[in-house]
Length: 50
Image (cartoon, rainbow, N blue to C red):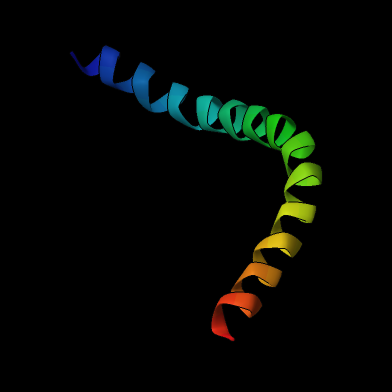
């Protein structure tokens, strides 16, 4: 049991680093598409406030 727990503890930081790098690489193209969407949302908010 102790050996298995040690293995899990060792794996976690590596997996989180891999997950973060994968998420970042996957988000980059979306972020470029989201920027114009963010501008549109701001314009909509301004219109709704009027």
